[in-house]
Image (cartoon, rainbow, N blue to C red; front, side, top):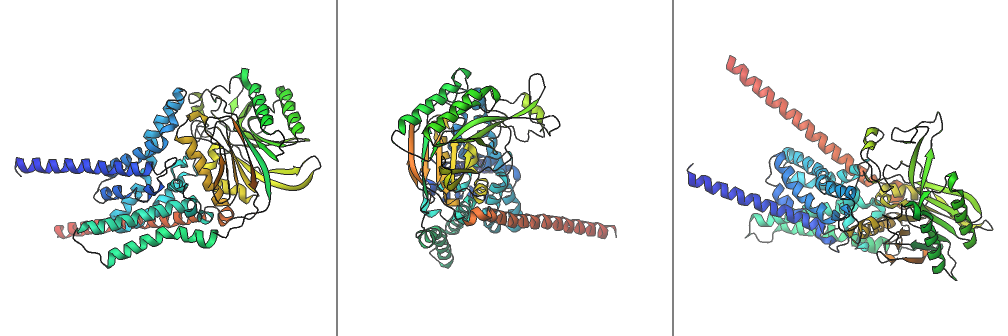
Length: 571
């Protein structure tokens, strides 16, 4: 090969590499802008097509990793740039976590692409792409059940603005949307590759079949809505709920000098807004009470809140922090904290507390799903030494893990102890993005869902709006009203069909009041949980087992052939 030919091949390879990178960036951009608060959910339906064009010609694991990383790095950067809190209040730990998420989180998305590559090596391109929806949903489901879970970027989360098309998740959960999106991407790629293979190709039978399949798949959600959901009748049972959004600076709230002042601010805001109004439930946001109010040394503050609740004759759900001190002889988790003198071990909890008039019992739920690293170091019970150097100094690191799915019960006329009970659960912030977790509470009896949160850490960025939109999915999956109370926004009320009927502006001090529908009937998803996702997982496992067996058989055949050749040569 002469020098000119070598130079020509090198130039072509260089151009191909740049074009491949461009296609991967395009995929990342389409997928990233498909997530809220951008109203471009349709981008997700073609988001993988540019990457599939690149994937078609990749033949090594290194190349698969390199190009897929570009896709998911760009997607993460666009959708989750806000995690570092850049431009808000400067906090080095928060910024480091934001950078780490941008660099490391894309690595997880390599897993389904690597599996796709293994399938391609055994069964070819077409079969591998047909397996893509199964492998992708299996990855999303498995990733969401680990302590490293950050299921913020489930494909299904891109469709929250088009609620009429996602009503079927009352059967499949959000993973059904992810499967639908992945399937459309595959069909779009097949149509593209078939037509581009021969630019002069006319419309023929194969292209018509692909188009028909695409139209049917795209239309199915709308058909489900018109046939099954359009005649949906909501319950006649309702309660009046007020959410209090105090807009307290999250960086200042942990200062001891301000602890109870903040509680008084919320009492005043509640009273000012509810003059001449009678509501059944008042909700304050996450960690609205930023001290251990159940601790004996805080009896005065506890009595103040109880007297306040009695005076307004209205139940109060509030975020707070709680503590458990372990008794001698009691099992102590390895991750538990120790007092300065090591006299006792204890755990702190991010909690929701339910106060009722004329009732001295304070029912408490401890947060069970904790944000990796910022709220708790993953698998800390196995590696407790990590606690010594991975702590965030704003009062919210190393929470203990709650163990009980607490359901609260509200009665309209508590003073007379009369009236039907209204059961509800309280998701705390991050917990609301776990579909199966929320469904477990509904199955246990929750008739509406309350979410308390504090998204003010991230300023007026995409994060708070994304978090609010994801609550739409929990409403539809379970056919439950969602009451969302945030410290600085976005607070909202969402109907069982996923319609946001009222919401607050961000970084404002306000109180919202709405008549909330209370439902009793369980959806298929509430009753059976992630049966769809698990079925897809089992199919994926069978597929990968077949790939594994094929590789073993193939290697055995190669070895036998090699041994035969050696035997012949010896003879």
